[in-house]
Image 1 (cartoon, rainbow, N blue to C red):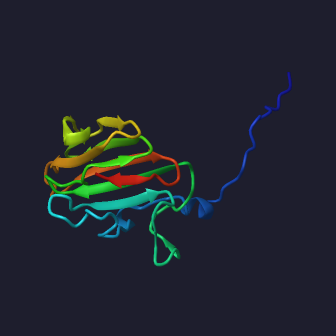
Image 2 (image 1 turned 180 degrees about the horizontal axis):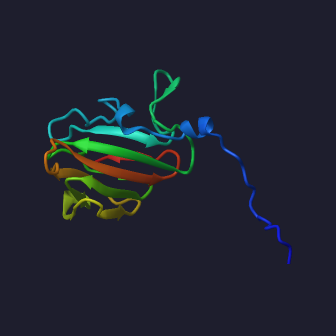
Length: 163
């Protein structure tokens, strides 16, 4: 047996400068207030920060609003909302995974919004494709005005249909 280890996969060297383009600083994230058609309606007001992915381009396609605008086969966003707020019932062609970070969040699904589950910090819910869903902040968390939710969707651009 050789003393030198052989690797089956290619190994690449990434410099700190190159890696910095793949780092998102929470305090520097941006969001468009009107990213979704319902995001300014009472009961649906929220901030949706696209962190990883290319699904949101503004300014005529010149500026990606994502902090890390790369196509990696998934999209990741943070959502901040005050209690009682979240998107309208909508449907995706992908699953959508929710992770409560701050506060309590309610994931609601099914036509007529007939089912729900509450998530406490670090709880996870993964809604299958083609299941109508929405989510709302129930409580923001101690000392906070808004809750924080992490969402992950497979694919580079998910289709969305508001109900």
